[in-house]
Image (spheres, rainbow, N blue to C red):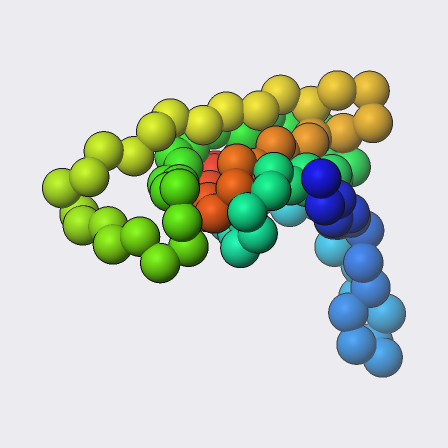
Length: 92
């Protein structure tokens, strides 16, 4: 399983601006045929939708049902478990 680490306390640019929290939308994509884990230190729950397929070149249409997706933060922060060949869009 591939793992990615996303932290929300990054400094941007030479101005040293600090953004202590993230609100809005997170849209991780797993392009691999294996599950993936996106680990963050975010403390909010995430809820949204997921689209996945058995192969990366599967054709989808807007009529295809999206699966609900949700994740709650644990002691180390919010962790998103992505299925193979999937895109997840969540709001926080």
